[in-house]
Image (cartoon, rainbow, N blue to C red):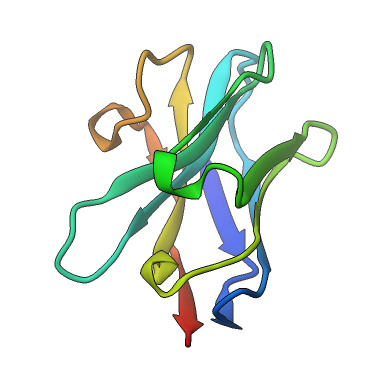
Length: 124
Protein backbone atom coordinates (compact mmCIF):
# COMPACT_ATOMS: atom_id res chain seq x y z
CA UNK A 1 0.00 0.00 0.00
CA UNK A 2 1.29 3.42 -0.93
CA UNK A 3 1.57 5.82 1.96
CA UNK A 4 2.22 9.53 1.77
CA UNK A 5 2.81 11.40 5.01
CA UNK A 6 3.02 15.17 5.04
CA UNK A 7 4.77 17.30 7.63
CA UNK A 8 6.07 20.81 8.08
CA UNK A 9 2.85 22.74 7.97
CA UNK A 10 1.67 25.15 10.57
CA UNK A 11 1.46 28.87 11.09
CA UNK A 12 3.51 31.43 9.23
CA UNK A 13 3.35 35.17 8.95
CA UNK A 14 2.82 36.80 5.60
CA UNK A 15 6.16 37.17 3.90
CA UNK A 16 7.66 34.31 5.83
CA UNK A 17 8.61 30.79 4.85
CA UNK A 18 7.63 27.20 5.44
CA UNK A 19 8.92 23.92 4.10
CA UNK A 20 6.57 21.02 3.58
CA UNK A 21 7.84 17.49 3.43
CA UNK A 22 6.22 14.34 2.10
CA UNK A 23 7.55 10.93 3.03
CA UNK A 24 6.56 8.34 0.47
CA UNK A 25 6.59 4.60 0.85
CA UNK A 26 5.05 1.46 -0.55
CA UNK A 27 5.48 1.99 -4.28
CA UNK A 28 8.14 0.31 -6.36
CA UNK A 29 7.91 1.87 -9.78
CA UNK A 30 10.42 4.30 -11.22
CA UNK A 31 8.19 6.41 -13.40
CA UNK A 32 5.85 8.62 -11.43
CA UNK A 33 4.93 12.19 -10.72
CA UNK A 34 4.84 13.44 -7.15
CA UNK A 35 3.84 16.79 -5.79
CA UNK A 36 1.34 18.94 -3.98
CA UNK A 37 -2.25 20.02 -4.14
CA UNK A 38 -4.02 22.42 -1.85
CA UNK A 39 -7.59 23.14 -0.91
CA UNK A 40 -8.84 26.26 0.79
CA UNK A 41 -12.30 26.55 2.35
CA UNK A 42 -14.97 26.90 -0.30
CA UNK A 43 -12.56 26.30 -3.16
CA UNK A 44 -11.71 23.37 -5.38
CA UNK A 45 -8.57 21.38 -4.84
CA UNK A 46 -5.87 22.79 -7.07
CA UNK A 47 -2.51 21.53 -8.19
CA UNK A 48 0.32 23.54 -6.67
CA UNK A 49 3.46 21.87 -7.94
CA UNK A 50 4.84 18.54 -9.05
CA UNK A 51 8.03 16.90 -10.22
CA UNK A 52 8.65 14.00 -12.58
CA UNK A 53 10.75 11.15 -11.25
CA UNK A 54 12.43 10.45 -14.59
CA UNK A 55 13.55 13.82 -15.86
CA UNK A 56 12.90 16.09 -12.84
CA UNK A 57 10.76 18.38 -14.88
CA UNK A 58 8.52 20.55 -12.74
CA UNK A 59 5.20 22.29 -12.83
CA UNK A 60 4.05 25.25 -10.76
CA UNK A 61 0.71 26.88 -10.34
CA UNK A 62 1.02 30.36 -11.80
CA UNK A 63 0.25 32.07 -8.50
CA UNK A 64 3.17 30.37 -6.73
CA UNK A 65 5.84 30.70 -9.39
CA UNK A 66 8.90 32.45 -8.06
CA UNK A 67 7.84 31.84 -4.48
CA UNK A 68 7.60 28.06 -4.12
CA UNK A 69 10.20 25.49 -5.08
CA UNK A 70 9.68 21.75 -5.32
CA UNK A 71 12.49 19.27 -4.89
CA UNK A 72 12.90 15.58 -4.31
CA UNK A 73 15.35 13.29 -2.60
CA UNK A 74 15.01 9.91 -4.24
CA UNK A 75 17.33 8.22 -1.75
CA UNK A 76 15.08 9.25 1.12
CA UNK A 77 11.83 8.90 -0.84
CA UNK A 78 10.87 12.43 0.04
CA UNK A 79 9.57 15.43 -1.77
CA UNK A 80 9.67 18.97 -0.44
CA UNK A 81 7.91 22.20 -1.08
CA UNK A 82 9.83 25.27 -0.03
CA UNK A 83 7.32 28.05 0.41
CA UNK A 84 8.78 31.55 0.51
CA UNK A 85 7.09 34.92 0.64
CA UNK A 86 3.87 33.28 1.70
CA UNK A 87 0.61 35.15 1.40
CA UNK A 88 -2.72 34.90 3.15
CA UNK A 89 -4.17 33.27 0.05
CA UNK A 90 -1.73 30.38 0.49
CA UNK A 91 -3.71 29.29 3.52
CA UNK A 92 -5.04 25.82 2.76
CA UNK A 93 -4.73 22.16 3.50
CA UNK A 94 -1.82 20.89 1.44
CA UNK A 95 -1.88 17.33 0.14
CA UNK A 96 0.97 15.25 -1.14
CA UNK A 97 -0.04 13.23 -4.18
CA UNK A 98 1.36 10.69 -6.63
CA UNK A 99 0.41 9.64 -10.13
CA UNK A 100 1.79 6.52 -11.78
CA UNK A 101 3.68 7.21 -14.94
CA UNK A 102 3.67 10.47 -16.80
CA UNK A 103 0.67 12.72 -16.57
CA UNK A 104 -0.27 15.43 -19.04
CA UNK A 105 -1.62 17.68 -16.33
CA UNK A 106 -1.48 18.02 -12.57
CA UNK A 107 -5.15 17.53 -11.92
CA UNK A 108 -6.85 15.95 -8.94
CA UNK A 109 -8.83 13.56 -11.13
CA UNK A 110 -5.62 11.91 -12.28
CA UNK A 111 -4.11 11.31 -8.86
CA UNK A 112 -3.59 7.71 -7.85
CA UNK A 113 -2.52 8.21 -4.24
CA UNK A 114 -3.17 10.93 -1.69
CA UNK A 115 -1.72 11.93 1.63
CA UNK A 116 -4.02 12.91 4.45
CA UNK A 117 -3.22 16.60 4.25
CA UNK A 118 -1.33 19.16 6.27
CA UNK A 119 -2.69 22.57 7.20
CA UNK A 120 -0.81 25.73 6.35
CA UNK A 121 -2.11 28.96 7.84
CA UNK A 122 -0.68 32.31 6.86
CA UNK A 123 -1.46 35.25 9.09
CA UNK A 124 -1.08 38.90 8.26
